[in-house]
Length: 336
Ligand SMILES: [Zn+2]
Image (cartoon, rainbow, N blue to C red; front, top):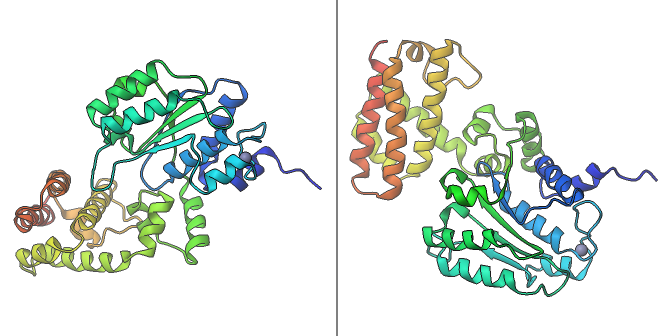
């Protein structure tokens, strides 16, 4: 029988097919015996970075690890990992009801990394999301990164690696997980979801497969219809902006803002390129092409500002939305 190639055997055990290039990079370091003590695994949300970090930890802890960086799936360590109870793997995430990772959590992880491994020599800590460590937590981790114990690996996982301390970033091997090509994402979602998804939905999900799948399985179509109706009436001036703001304020406001940002970015692209692409940004091309570009950019800035503002507080949500919708209306009605 034909032996599977290294790549084929990796594909069958990796959590998701698009993890392969990330795995290949790590496997090369492993083969060359240049495996790092600390990794920063970064990329947009919806790529399964945390699941990959767990898989990597399981691989390092495996007692019959293969020559390539692959777990056996059969040994006592692999079984413990499958049960989520391996004593040499520490997962640090914000505690329930907390948004940040505390210094005490990091201290506990640091201490645990200095202990002797209970089974095959490695100890692994996963910190996720790493950008949610407090400053004190990050500084505490920094000390451990400066003097790493032998046979330990710290995996930091983040979708906002730019907000980590630069000293922390510089002390680990940075590994960026990339979004797969659109066709691959489409194919994978079709396999999982049983039907195809639009380019518009993929674009809205930033082409990240898990995020796109989640959106496809949710109520994306309802949201889309509601946003189209709202926007059409606003840009035509056929409705009271206050009514739309009121309706949006209490109904998935962050999703609506994300949709608006995506829609307006698409409209701006269409305006600049003077083409109607496959994602026609809802409003007819004539309106978009006639709109005022600087006003559109100002409205886009406003969407981002309002998104941040409403993430922090829900005070005066309706008023905030009203002023945003007025800005969008002006950008569509003011002539270029
Ligand atoms: Zn194993």
